[in-house]
Length: 97
Image 1 (tube, one colour):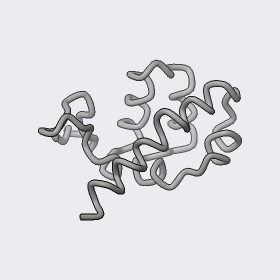
Image 2 (cartoon, rainbow, N blue to C red):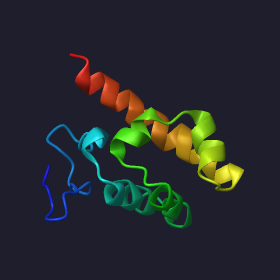
Image 3 (cartoon, rainbow, N blue to C red):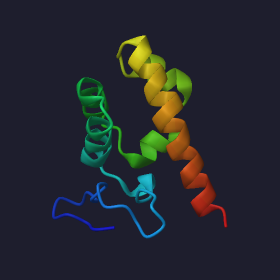
């Protein structure tokens, strides 16, 4: 995992085991870049507007994503089910050893 000059991490470079760097280390810019890279370019701005960094992302509930970000329901459901939940699960698995 490489740290950039602005304090964010390079999420495009997977770590040795093929997983992303720990989201708890992500800056707001990393969260935004992650969602842009996964096809949610329009919705990524909501994470910027709400100042969601990696630690905040890991604390988000389904309701937070569906209502707190003020994004349309369809993309919000996909973001939570296919991205937020798996990132939370990955974080728990790698940090509860």
